[in-house]
Image 1 (cartoon, one colour):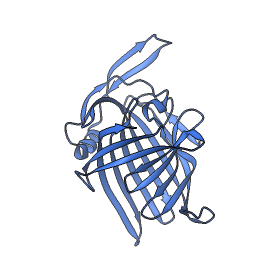
Image 2: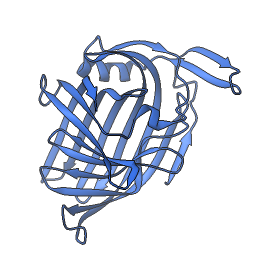
Image 3: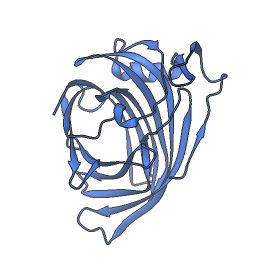
Image 4: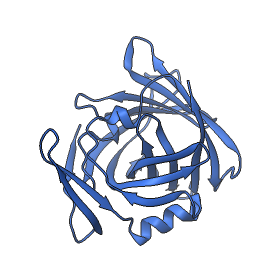
Length: 259
């Protein structure tokens, strides 16, 4: 994976608390508040009462603890944008022969094919767009939940994209490349219909070009240990000159989860 990591800069973060523990060696635990820009972007879609107070955030040593790759169903209520007020299921199923890989069907829109890198990072290997019946493969896979991230850190990676029609892996329709950035913004109390969680917040941005399309997308994900994504916001602004424009934002909060 062509990735690099940048440490937090104190000029970019508001540090509320710093503690050092001696359990198994010294470990930094930071409590960080959200920037005004990020808080406004989240509350505009999720509402005022989802995000609670900032709490101590430890390093993400085992991404699978925060984004389990197992058979389960997560149900979300859409809080803003397209389909606001409706619900949709995210269905996770282990891929036969490899317990470290799953397919994740996101409502009627897409299927993500997820795996685990050698360092434990949860990655997106491919994405199937159900309506268009197209499959995008990422080389190397896109990082979704990077391993070893400390609060305030940013990881950056580049990935090549090849787009095929479903069932025709021998014929590439489009190619391109994306720059992927993931920042660990902190940990927060989160209140959603399925309950109250302590969740880490990752902000990912995707920028690049695939065929004629310019891609600009931002995702915020609140991840609760042992559960996965309990709240999210997606902002998309993709376009191809004189062809189309795909611009929207949507929020989702967890209402139920189970096997």
